[in-house]
Amino acid sequence: MNLLHQQDMKYKLVIFDFDGTIADTSPGILDSHRFALSAMGKEVPCEKELRTVIGGNLLQIYINRFRFYENKAREAVSIYRSRYAENGIHMAVLYPGIEMLLSKLKEKNYKIGMATLKAEKFAKIMLSELGVDSYFDAVCGMDEDDRLTKALLIEKCCNFCDVEKSKTILIGDSNNDLLGAKEAGVHFVGVTYGFGFSKDEKYCFDSAHTTEEVLSVIENQKENGECENVVI
Image 1 (cartoon, rainbow, N blue to C red):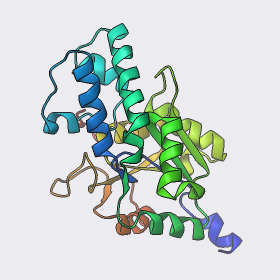
Image 2: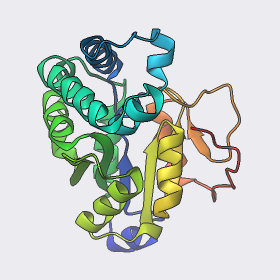
Image 3: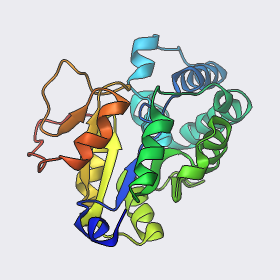
């Protein structure tokens, strides 16, 4: 890519969510939630309900969705992560076409980052096991105290890659991702092959139905509309 083309690029940094965007991580996540809830003496919800919490902040999930007090929620999160470290990190599968997408982005000189509410150490191990870690310039995940938000992780990615927010776009599959992008002040593309968004719905942002569509949507994106009806 020549220098003039680089200067004309609308975006310089493409940040990906992990769960439901890069890989189908649901088997390990569901297994870990079931294990943690059972260990804490809680009734385990059905799979449909458990799937609605994928990609969210674990501490807030156990406080707000599973109704734990904070000290018990932190205990449940610890159990969840122990189980995930043992089993869950080895159960993820890349979505078809993801490695090709990452390769094409690199060929076009984009920087590539990840902003995930998954523990950062898990994200790095999983990307390595999936064979795509070398494509990422920055991997930013949840800290040990569960204090970071999606927006803060996006900002951390931008700072690490030294790219302005106006030249950054987030690729994600859920309202958590959309709201994180809006709060951080970066552009957004939603994918409908993951856990959150559906290809049968109309949204106020550009969407891609397959990994093959993501690059063309990035390069032909219009301004996002106002998403006042977003519900988490």
